[in-house]
Image (cartoon, rainbow, N blue to C red; front, top):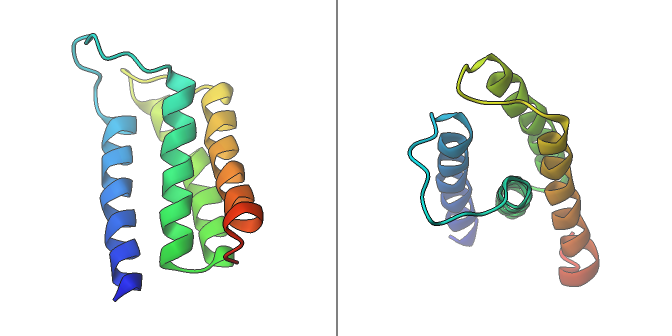
Length: 108
């Protein structure tokens, strides 16, 4: 039952992150979060939920492919930018998740 919870949470987060990464930006709001923090936290959460829903090996492969694919797609979207710094913070979020799980939560 708990495994289904993590899978549902991962799918919901994946949909939310994908929408944020690929949708056309709207009007500027007063709620400003630095871009690098959004990338870091999105991929931290995605890799955390995916690791809980599957296992470390599958999660690391899937999330490692998803990070550059998002930047490649953004490269072809006229209203988005693909930058290496975004990709760096994507992978930094993934790395910090695996570090957290391995050394802090010790759940591998």
